[in-house]
Image: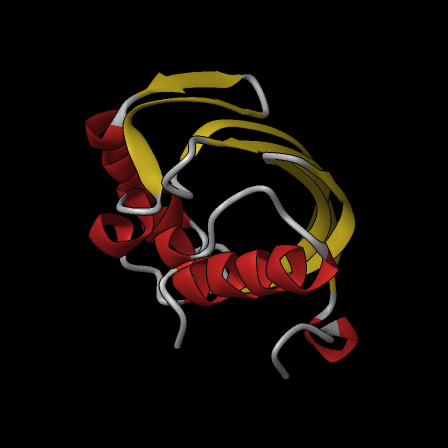
Length: 139
């Protein structure tokens, strides 16, 4: 597995795709400490209507997220790239404690520092209830 930080800007198609895959792999680990290491210590996030600053807030957010979003599985797709920025679209599936499944769709805009750490993440996400038989991510 490639370390996300080892892939540095400026991006070309191959390195942008590798960066997206590394991010997908990290998030699918559901390990908040591991995921947080891909971001700068002062990284700024917008996730839906939540605004976060720094790795400690990112770790706390992801810990809460994955306590609620059970059996989380994510797929990311490269949308565009230039210089030190990448845009992705994604979908992920999860269920809540009652067993209701959801598919969450969205777009992210990423900006990286010279070392390949993400310093800014903007995410827009929508959730749709699905039946277990409609699952398609990681099934």
